[in-house]
Length: 269
Length: 319
Image (cartoon, rainbow over the protein chains, first blue to last red):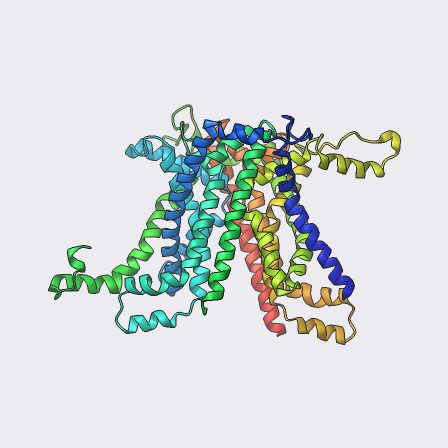
């Protein structure tokens, strides 16, 4: 067994190396003085300085954050409702269709989702005169729809694992469904609400395919800016931008994980 | 706070309304809001895609029309799709790339998942976080990170070239490997991007395995590899299947990775759909390819879940 354990340990190490090496390499080269992407020519912070002076990038970041915030909030509300229906309503009529539709985006290629939504928006504009132009709102709607599946999965798992007897007791004592939800269910599932929201937020912040199809002139998200530059090849300012984004998201997620770890240790369930 | 919320004797009408709401309306609301949303923004777009796939491309805005007389629909896009060597080739490339990606993810991910499952509990949660972390950070940027490594002048390419040259006679030594814009790069980056999707379900299954079974097999004289082959591997089949689904399905429809590190003469199907739609402006064709791709993916998922059920049933009979 000794030999086997050694092999497993080396595998884990190599797996992690494989996952992190490209990112670390990119971060190192974001401090490269040379404007040639991957030949080292000394340390410099100039790409970071140039990044903060780039209005296009700053504006796109602002738009991306607004879209991500709103779409994640919508997706969390919708996903919570859908998860409640799936976890608490038993075998209602049309359940199979409902759960299939809710979870379908998990396996749906983004290209198809993007094209389908764009066709819808174009035809709606023609038939009912809305949306008059595509941009912030259409991307937000598209992202909320796509992320909802992920949020539903996260929250439903928590609802199924949760002890339902407290809810039943409250119901027996005459609480209304809304009171049960507000005073018992939501506080218990709060960590997974946050996890679901964060997941939706990062999915939206990261998406380039759906945004590319459903946006219009004048509304360019950050991944779209990156996409249009990256297609030309690697550049040091994108290295800097990518490093900033990856490091900040990683720190956020680590902080979230630690917080949830503490919360779980503190609570009895 | 509205007037209704202030405690006071209920008027008969509002009491009836409230009772109705608590008995029926609440459920209708919880179920109705997401249903309506999905009907408008998920089912309606697909109905439109299906409808447009039965139309004809036309120089109009939007660029399609339906046949003017009965049956109004036209299967010509589907016929063209099957006759178009490029589209069929793209389907085959996608399936082959996705299958190869799934296989490599399994071979690389299995020992990693097993190693994490067998690690001490404290280290286990740290390792899990480290596996999940890249999944949270930007997918696009992680693909971009590989572009930096694959290029001819990068340290990674030089390293690989050096290793490769060890096996070549000195006069045949290569200056650099051609990695960027190849199918190899597409599969490599897909393995990289989807590896956590394979490791996590595998870990979830492996973690639950009863280690006393392994000890029993060892006590009865099995060697470690046989224990793995006869005990661990069969019991982890559900995890393998779940991981394979999570990798294979999105890999089939991948657009970002082949666009950035692939080439244009071996396109995957996602890129063909996107080009038909945006470049050729042939909406019916783009829609028809989408419908076929979805049908293929749904069929595959059905097959996989059937397989899964069969495995679970077989295990139930064993127990």
